[in-house]
Image (cartoon, rainbow, N blue to C red):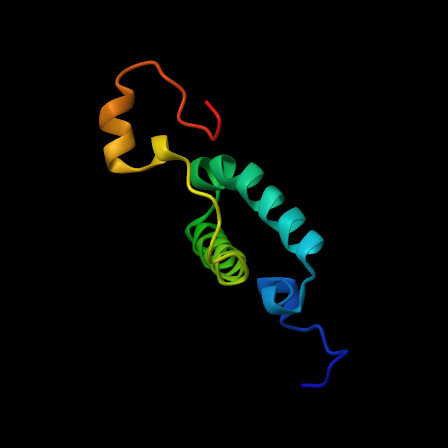
Length: 92
């Protein structure tokens, strides 16, 4: 398959490694926004494709951002300390 052949793109999307950082983030935002509806109402094939695409996009983002900030409240220890009703987001 040559560089301009997009036959596989229709089912699986563009290879995440070929996306620039801005495109990758946009793809991640879109797939996370559609996750709930796909889980609840998508066919098994749609859910399988969604799972695969999301894993590939997230894997690429993690590969590019190995030292991403981790909010203390998003760790097991932080969750225990947080207790009920407190925010777990960074800075929260």
